[in-house]
Amino acid sequence: NLMVRHYDGKPPAAAFGVSAKFYSDGRKQTARYHIGLRLPCSTVSADGNGDAGARLAASGHAAAVTLSAPPLVHAWVDAIGDAPVGMGFGLAHLDDAGNKGGKIYVMNLAGKPMPKLPLSVATNGVAKGAATIYDSIPALQPKRDGAGVRRDWLHSHMGSLEGLIG
Image (cartoon, rainbow, N blue to C red; front, side):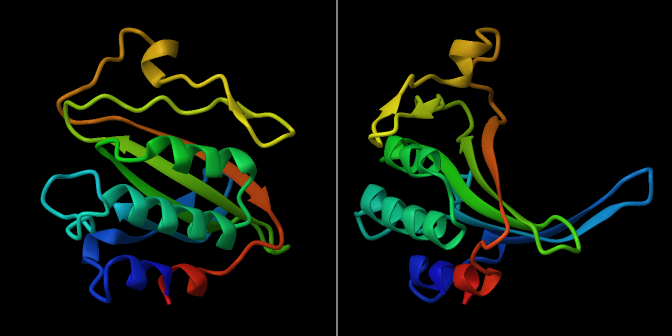
């Protein structure tokens, strides 16, 4: 539902992904899904209506609420604004006990800098300590092929995949 609304009823195939992890000890994680609200390429975008930042923020906050994200994720959505980055969310079923994990992905577009993202949120909800991956790793400058960061969280009563894709 969220992804369909975000893309005005026509989400590109590249905006939805499914994956699995297989571990050497026999464990596996299946039912891992992700949606791209702004894709990390210049050829596909949902931002054609001239409201790129507002649309991305509204959909980003809606995805964060659906996935029971912590306040830091909302602060990242706010910090991204109109920055030329790709952004998406993921949902993974982590175990048979029903535990789920959520993720926000932020990827710079090729050759463009990553925005400063908050490192924490104070109890009053104010973001603090904004930094980029370049502040932490100066040798990692904007690359031609792009780079990304993500924030993961665990929640056993998280929203469903249906809330993201309809």
